[in-house]
Amino acid sequence: MSRGGLPTGQPLQPGPGAHPRLGRLTPERSSCPTAYLWAAGMDPWAGRWHSYGMPLAPLAARIRTSRLRAVRFPTWQSFGGNATLMRRALNAWPPFAFSGIVVESISTDFRRARVSLRHRPLTRNYVGTLFGGSLFAMTDPFWMVMVLRNLGSDYVVWDRAGQIEFLAPGRQRVAAEFEVTEELLEGLRAETGGGDKVLRWLETDVVSADGTVVARVRKQLYVRRRREVGTVGQMSDVTVEHNPTESRYEARVGGAVAGFVAYRTSGSTVDLHHTEVDDAYEGKGVGSSLVRGTLDQLREDHLTVVATCPFVKTWFERHEDYQDLIDPR
Image 1: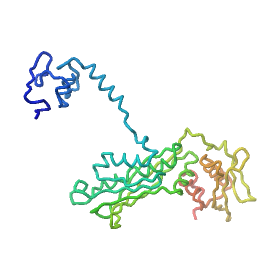
Image 2 (image 1 turned 90 degrees about the horizontal axis):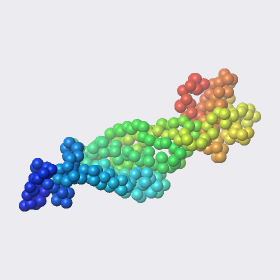
Image 3 (image 1 turned 120 degrees about the vertical axis):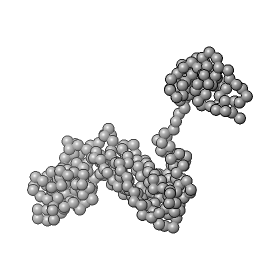
Image 4 (image 1 turned 180 degrees about the vertical axis):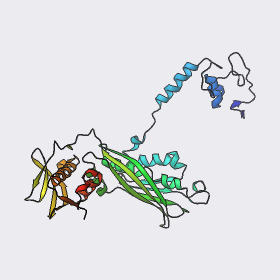
C-alpha cells in the first residue's frame, strides 16, 4: 500500500533543501509523478526548477530532452504506402478506438475502404442512438487520404469543407464505404493541369445493417497540382491555331500538335463538343491553355459559345471572366 505514491511505513524526515511535506526524495523512492518531479528538482505546479531533494535540475532537463529526442514518433506519412499498416494505425488511434470506429478494410491500391461504427453503451447518446459526431468522424480522413495516395506527391489535397445530413436514427452498427474511381482521378488531373485549384464534393452514405441510410456525409476536397512541379501551363509555351478544315482549334508545342478542341457552328454560336490532349502532354497544362486560347479567338470573332464538352464546361465554371461568352439561350 502507498499513500500519495509514497511507500507507507517509511517516513521521510525533512532535511536541508527537502520539500516541506515530502521530505528528501530520490526518483528511485517515489512512484508518484508529482513526488518524482519534486525529487528531480521541478516544481510540478509552478513549473519552476529548484534544488529540493537533490541538485539535479540541469541534469533532469538534459535527461528529459535527450529521451524525447531518442524516441522516433511515427507519422501518418510513414504508414501511407502500406494499406495494412494504415488500417492498423487508424484502429489504434484513440479518437477512433474510443469512439467505437473500426476500419475494416483498405485496399492495397487505396481505391476502396470500408469503415464501421459499433452500437454500444459508450457510443450511444442520451436517446440511445449513435452520436452524430461519431457518424461524421468515421468518414473524416478517407476521401482526402485515398485521393492523395492515388494522385501522388505532385498534388496538394486537403479537406476544405464538410456537411452531414441525419436521415434516420442509428440504433445498430453502421458502415460507410469509399471508392476512388479512375474517372474521378482523370477528371481531377485534367482540371488541375493548368495549375488551377479544384474544389470537388464527394458523398458517402452511412448505412445500417438492415440497409437504412442513417446519414449522408459530403466532403469538399481542395486539389491542386504543386506549383514547383515543372509544367508547360503558360501561353508562351502553347500556341493555339484555328484549323477550319478539321473544324477544330489546335494547341501546338514546339510546332507539334499537343491537343485540340473540336467544334460545330450554328450561326454565330460555336459548340465546343470535344477536347483531346496527347498523352505525352497530359497533366502539363496544355488543356487549360488550349481552352483559354480558343475562347480568346472566339471573343475576337464576336461569337458565343455552347460548351457540351465536360472539360470546357468545367473550365468555364472556374473562370468567371469568360462566362460572358456563353450563349444565353
